[in-house]
Length: 415
Image (cartoon, rainbow, N blue to C red):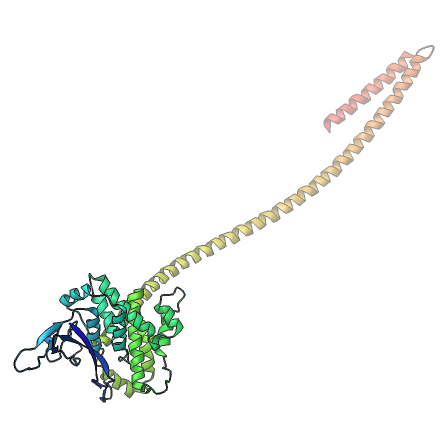
């Protein structure tokens, strides 16, 4: 089987204005079998058409094959050429201009055997991708890769091709976006890179026609959607997270451009992608319900905590009252004990004074009594020492001293 490339322009209809224009010439891969010429059909218009094969729109049931008209169409039926390599499948995806692409199990199994893209194949595919000015196809390839099961090499090859394509596309040329696509650890947040892509403005190139406002808007939207699918693959973001990110980066800015209620009503009643809008609304409703549930739970917890706090406050007030009562009682005891101590101190001082006075009196009396008795005994002893001892004097004096001592002893015992 030989290969040949040709170019073809296809009609493109603007969904908003209805304007029809011809696309830029697109490189198209045309396989050849022996001497027969096989032409690439124009893309089908039905978004839900099954793909994974190169099939002409007039024969949707032949998905997985390319109808090959013979030179004499009236004499023989068209033969079919199956997609056999990943390169052919990607070329087919680009021929559909961003419409949905799917893989039949038979074709998926065949592609898994030929999933490698060498440098020459990648160069040819990048040439084909260059005609996709609005970046409408890569997202479809990423979505197909998510549906591949059991063939990790095929899934990896599809994602690797799209990743390389994104890294070289101008809309993702910002260094911070590159860092995020390369999974650098300190890369900016998802919000930041989506805002970068949403604000992309192409550089003016000499000799090249600038994108129209509608085309630029379509390019930004396709790039954001592509990045959202890439983030879902690379970082495992869920549908609800992606819906919130797309709302902030793309949907909300578009809504803010609606000038009045009539414009909002027109937009609301002109919705065509009902499933997409319903999915986004469902995610937001589920998030709102979850937030409401969490709020209710939080309110219940807050009420329980408030009740417990009220009980604790009540206990605290009781403890404070008991503390104040105990402190007042302690202060009263302290004051009373202070007064008692002062009174005892005064009494002790008075008693001490009396005792000192009594002691002084007793001492004085005993001194006088002893002095008198000593004097009497000395007189008696003097009488005994005379040449003619006078015993009766001594006896009289001794009796006086004995009586005096007995009387004093009696007084001491009574005191």
